[in-house]
Amino acid sequence: MNVKRIVAKTSREAMRQLRDALGPDAVILSNRAVDGGVEVLALAADDIAAMAPPVNDAPAPAPEPRSPAPRAQAPAEQDEPAPAVTIKRRLIERVAVSSQDSAQLAQSVISEIKSMQTCLESQLADLVWRDLPGRDPSGATVMRDMLAAGFSATLARELLETLPKGDAQQAQAWMKNTLMQRLQVMQSETDMLDGGGVFALMGPTGAGKTTTTAKLAARFVVRHGADKLALLTTDSYRIGGHEQLRIYGKILGVTVHAVRDAADLRLALSELRNKHTVLIDTVGMSQRDQAVAEQVEMLCQAGKQIKRLLVLNATSHGDTLDEVVQAYRTRGLDGCILSKIDEAASLGPALDCAIRHDLNVHYLATGQRVPEDLHLANRQALIHRAFKVRTHASPWQLDDSELGFALSGIQTMQRESAVSLG
Ligand SMILES: Nc1nc2c(ncn2[C@@H]2O[C@H](COP(=O)(O)OP(=O)(O)OP(=O)(O)O)[C@@H](O)[C@H]2O)c(=O)[nH]1
Ligand SMILES: [Mg+2]
Image (cartoon, rainbow, N blue to C red; front, side, top):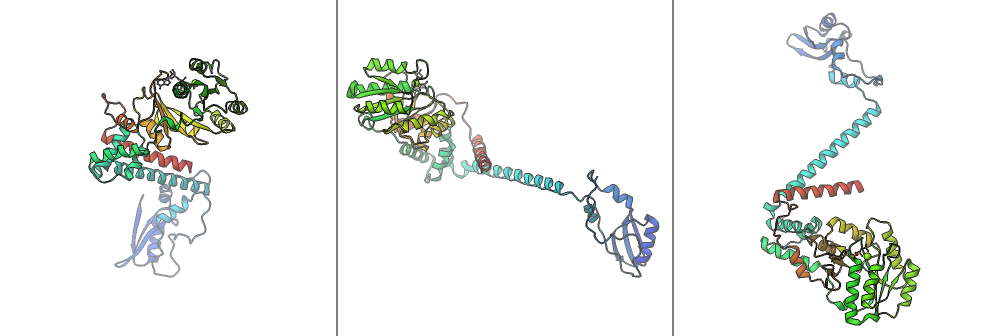
């Protein structure tokens, strides 16, 4: 690219020289008055064409008529410098985009801005959490202890909001005490077995519903006698579905009835209205099965109030337990029973779930033996066990630097899912 510089006494003379040197289509880049005359910088038309990026296959729409760029022609009878025309203006005219192109351009700019925003927010959240141990050592201790014990980040963050000032030890004591107060448990047998009524045990497959029903039945028989109790099962379509309960019933001397639908259930409950307590063992269903809602409806249409207790397998992951509660609580729940406590490596997820969903823990099932392995829940013992130091290191345990990283990730994920839901 050759920029031609011409200095002449008048602009007319400069134009003449320019036309001779670069031809009539030369483009003036600039002009100005200098000592002794006028200076003009210009380019040949061919050089300008070589500079412009290729235009789309389709010819670009003709630009709006503008005042023509000055050619290397002398303005009529005037010695003033010709108006300057910049390359920029020329290039804009040449690459003028179609409306479709501009929509694509706008879209790509928007997505670029969004990704920069996400990146910035994530880095800020990361900084906040990484900074936590230095900024708030007690808060960091609470957060680390709760996550290590299997409690959710949601509950840990909630507690951090009201954590009083104090050292790490005081914060730990406050946190355990707060969890203990928020965990609702049934205080005595009087609340359920002595009070009487109709109770249904619900929950996912294999959670321990039938075994727990048998344990409860045995406890009841010891306290009130077999004739005041009736057992029902909705497990009528699996081969041998109700056999297990029937065997327990036989051992205890309690009759067992199988019901198939709401009408059956209504009839059975009406016939059993003189019983002090009726325990219903429901067929296990995955929390993802649509039939869960039908089962809940069936219990709600029984013509008599049925207290629904959810059997939560304490060995399940926190997210799974959360899903189970969401699926089964559509018409409310009266409480829960935590099963397989003996097998759970960590009690955090189950306790967290009971606390966040305000589920009153009626019993703990701690083994397969009927009736021995069923106990009332003791809040202090449960929280103590949840935070008991492990004898061996867990491969899931995060160190302090990973903690900040994980928490900032959780925040970003939550925000993204909230945005996508919105
Ligand atoms: N370790 C342990 N095992 C248990 C406990 N409760 C039940 N089990 C065992 O878990 C298995 C399933 O128990 P069930 O009582 O049949 O479970 P369920 O919820 O009735 O199962 P479905 O009717 O198939 O949905 C059996 O082997 C029980 O012995 C418990 O508290 N601890
Ligand atoms: Mg069962």
